Image (cartoon, rainbow, N blue to C red; front, side):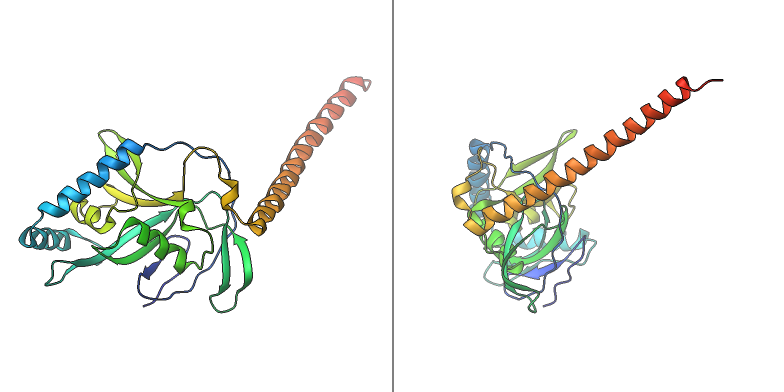
Length: 250
């Protein structure tokens, strides 16, 4: 399979290799708490739906899905009841990821990179693949060395007049959610983010990662100092010009 790396889209499969490119961006180390009760309810709903859908119901839903999809990313139903299809995952990572050497030799050893915020990757998966497997597949495609436990998959959906985002539990099946919601990403979309469990678990990071964070923070601090210094120099020049204008004789 081929995977095209762009700023807006990409394609990869759980079974096939790909190439990757990385870009720099800014970061934040802060996290917000997540709702455990909502996650548990979603898993129970997922399990209930899977246990109640017959082969014929799945077939009808797959046919309806394929009939309305507009991007040719159709689903395929197998005789055993499993089906395959595509999901798009938007990457909203605020911290750098650590990648290992590979991908044509562009990276040697381990280095930290920022992925572009909002980058979308398309995965070809099976209805049996879980959230945890999807996360691991995404990290594998980018040759990410970070612990998969640092990341979480979220679903973004419309709730009345506003957009909601909810963390998915590791055992949920994204392709089932895609099938039930239909192909419209405005109705349901997937987002990969860092885990949001309160305080940052610094012990989960390796020493090279922590050193990379320090270097990044130093660079951001220097950038901010330059911006502030430039701004105040401009103010000073304007004030001095105003003073000279007032002090000069007519």
